[in-house]
Length: 65
Image (cartoon, rainbow, N blue to C red; front, side, top):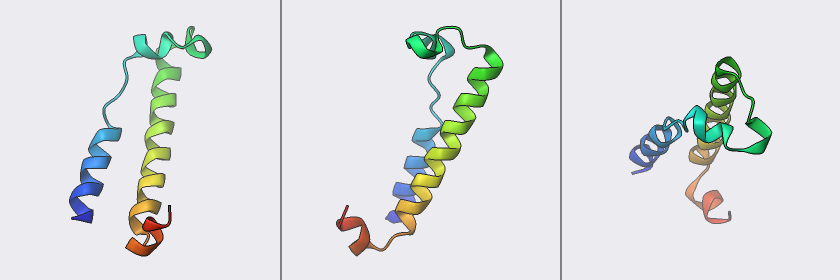
């Protein structure tokens, strides 16, 4: 069960917001395509680290969150 949940979570992180959506955020209104790719790559890496940490915890540890 944990494996399938982890796989579903990994797939969810790969649904990228469009550059147009990112540009609708004031902080990123002038973001270039290259900066967008770097931002998304960094966010995906961060999400994978969080997911990996969460799913490597025991069920008891996760229950405490």
